[in-house]
Length: 463
Length: 140
Image (cartoon, rainbow over all chains, first blue to last red; front, side, top):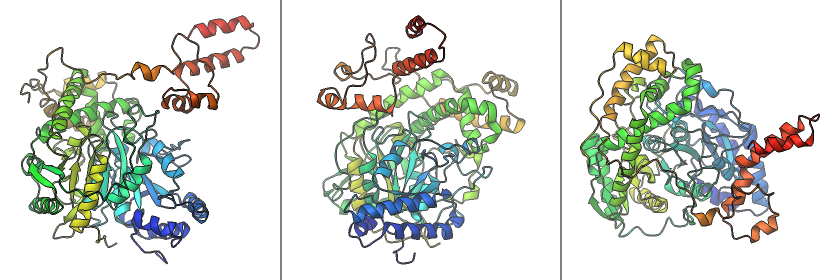
């Protein structure tokens, strides 16, 4: 990156741009060059919008010279390819939408554009944000920058890979059962699944509307907070959107976490879905780090992971099938095998099954909310261990294992994944902070201070 | 924690699966059918974990939450024809919630859309007398 330091965070780049020590045009050119050099190794991008990026960067540069100091001015980001982008193909990584060119931006894309970000392009995902890596689609799946033989996690696979590899300073992902936090953990970055309703989903291709959330992914929790300051806000065009708290997430990051009550969901990763020895070691280290920050840590028990998982999977299967039914009737062979295996069972889920799942979900929401009477934050992990080998991911093992992340989706609460450390082999491990509804600011604050205390942000993948 | 769940679903024979799939309007090749059979077994296992022993009068999760009456005062009442958008200055002085004008600006209401459609249909029939506009409006 000629003249531009590699691996800048959004916060760092923002400070340099505001001080006129970094040109948005030079930063954008440097990232475009890095994308050209590195992306063929990790397949994070489905499309690079070079011309639009340079136009936006020049506009940002003019605004900077005119004295505008918006924190996201001239910051290059990219979008999971389920976010509609005006005039730029939005494919959902699917043959079905290969020629889909939206007329309007998603509300989140619009907000970021107005804040002065530079869109670098569109990012890989699992097809329609469900399933796993598929090799029977027009584009290959993304690869993990820490070891390109390994899985990124998904479905916001390209978003996590691009940020970890330093190809974009931030990205947007979506999370219906863990699709922001799983890849964030496997790729060693930060990813926030916000409280439902905090961030608009208008213009984001849905998967299961009663569980879908849109959220930021970046190298640090601080960068996620900077993005969330722009993303959060009421959008009447999203029926789930509500006016959230009027606060600055970025400005509250340094309020001390001393005395914060952290409940450890140990049963999730030690019993319900046991983690690897290295993961368990990382979790114990995370608990020690939180204690060193002055948090009061104690174990908490919730219903079993299998219960949250059953409810989440049934709802996703039924709602996704309903969304895709017409296209499955006419173009079933144009979907990947992985997608079909995950979604077709929804055709056989009865209305009474779906309603039973929704009713049980209301119990689980209440039971999870009750836990927050005793603690401020719950601690878990998004994954059982480090990223597995990409080609070991089978299309038909989708329902076999529960996901640790689904709890937060079913319980309708926010959740933040940040890097907890590395395996002996140099692969990232993640930790997950879960908060009560509207507790997003606390999660970002804790994540930010945890990252500093754990010292996990100084290492980047070598590509 | 509720312990009672639905009785396990009986295994589905290939013929029964074919019937279910046809009834769903799907046309699957043998490979796709085999995948569905395996995936359905796993989903059936998940369904068996969901409790069903709730009282009939229990809260329903699938409710619609309406805005409180105060928040809807500013919205065109159903009994009144949709008024033209008020001038910006006037709207700003109204105590109505902020969401209302934004929603109108973002997307026309169903009533407005229907009216627009009716108008366009009328416009396409120049030979008809003006009286024909009335039924078109009433039909809404």
